[in-house]
Image 1 (cartoon, rainbow, N blue to C red):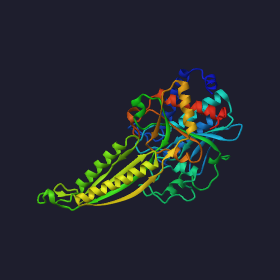
Image 2: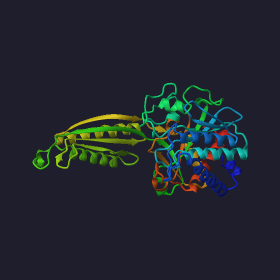
Image 3: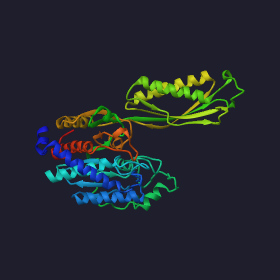
Image 4: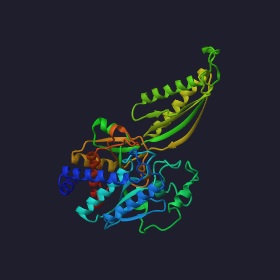
Length: 429
């Protein structure tokens, strides 16, 4: 395997330099669609900026010899046709958060275009088709749902019966989709591959955290994407006068909630990495300076790659919080409003990627993703791999988002090697 790779590489340095230049240029090019004066990017599903970006990506795909088409949700594909059956797919999502950066999602798309360009230029047509995808939506920034793009590919959603949801301006998902020219069952450019034909999916992404940078690792090889549970806890006490109610008589909902929040933090620390638990919102009523809090509500976000551990942790936390409430003379109600299962990446692909990093002299780290990605929807359908490159300062979803060109290039180099083995050499998983 390594002999094949070394045979086609002039040198690691030559390819890193080439891919670094191309990545910087393409990211700058794609960032113009939805660009803001602040330097950020806002590209929301089915908006004008989104339509311009998807059209430009399709045109770019055609310019390098890929067959480009879209599906009824607006996902854009570019195919380098193989001589045999099977498709190796790579890509990510084109949409952004509001006032986002130019790397999140976009990097995976431009990396696929760069890799397909290079492989076709050096080797011609592959055995298995290579397909680059620009998923229509992943972030949930315009409508209250996520993974609309990959969700349509995998059957989680359908354009014929979209969720009955609206954006902040009261525009429904269905109306926005139709106004952009999608969701009407119109034929695509033709010859679309079904997801059942996919032999593997690889998503390249910035880390959106600081682990790789802190540990001076060049490539993060994702073993799995964590499961998530989200709760709202409501603590009931007794509102009363701040000056005339002795401390021993109080039923202070805010004090009780504070003790609960600290108990959650301590329990997560005791579990150790990769367990994380976050209280991100706290609301207090009546919220007046001279009144003991009568009620408090807070959210809890729990994430871990193993569903059994999530279950044990959440059950244990529920018991601890109930004991705190009982001891303090408070009431406690909880509601679970999100329960997402963890998604494991394909072991053969993760091992292959790590071997390729070693062969290239790239420092890699096995890790879990604490954020959701399109790869988690694809993983149950076909062998799936996700790889990260470092993010400066761990910053993402911000105009300050940045990854050095040489780090972008290192990820593309591994992607090229993977696609070469899977599509040209027929590596079996």
